[in-house]
Amino acid sequence: MRNLRLAAKLVKGAFVGALAAASFGALAGPVVTSWAFDIDSGFSAFAPGAVDSSNNNPVLNLPSLLTWGTDVGNGRSSLGVGAATNGQFNGVVTTDGAAVNTVQVIHDNNAIEGASLTSATLQDRILLSPLTPVVGLATTQFLTFGISFTETPNQIPCVVGSSPTPCNDIIVVNVAGAGFNPSNNTLFQPFTYDGNNYNATLAISGLGVVSDDACAAAAASPGCIGLTTVENQSNPFQVSLAIGFVPPVDVPEPASLGLVGLA
Image (cartoon, rainbow, N blue to C red; front, top):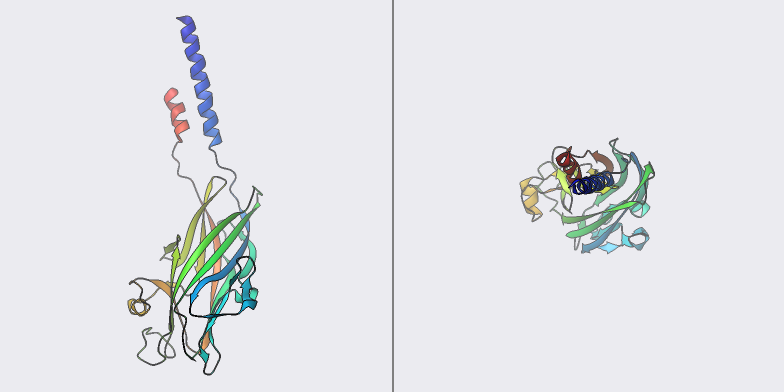
C-alpha cells in the first residue's frame, strides 16, 4: 500500500511538472514596441482603364496608376495609389504611438469623353519587421480593396449635395477581411505576432459613410463607405498606418486551471 501511495505521488508530481511546462510554454513573447514597415500597392483588376507601365509596382508587378477617358480640356482622369513612387513606401511605426503617413490616393478628376472607370481591385501588401525588440522574421499582411467608381454627370442637380462644382464623382470602397470603425472612419485588421495580438489600423483622409443617394448611384447598399472627389481638380487623400497592442484577456489557461485543481 505504501509503495502504491509513493507511486501515486510520483505520478502526480510528474503530471504537475508537465502541466507547469505546458503553462510556461504557452506564454507569449515580448511585445514589439516599434516596427519597420514596407507597403506595396497595385491594381490587380480594373474595368475599363489604361495602364502606364512606368508606374508598375516591382514587388507585386501590378500598376499603381489607372487612367481613362478622352481628354477634353485638362487631361485624362486617373486614380493612383502612391503612383509617384510606383506604389511603394517604407518607414517606422511605434506600437500604440501616433499614426504614420504612408502613400497618397490621388484621383485626378477631369472632364472627359468616352468610357470611364467603373470598378477596380487594389492589392495592398504590408510587411512588418520588428525593430524593438528584434524577435524574428517579418510578418506580411494583405488587404484587398474592392472599388466601385461612379463618373457623375457634370450638371446639377448633383447626387453629392456638397459638390462645390458640378458634380463630385463617387468612389465606394469594400475591404475584404478588414473591419471599419465608424467612430473615427478607420479600417483595421487584427494580426498575431510571437503570441501577442495587435491591430493594424489604416486611416484614409476623407473616407467615411457615404450618403444613401450616393451609395445608390454607385449601385451600393445604404451605409456604404467611400470618398467623393471634386470635379476639375486633383484630389489627394492621405493614407496613414498605426499599430496597436491588444492586451490579453486575464483568463487562466487550461494548464493553470489544472494546477489549481491538483492543489
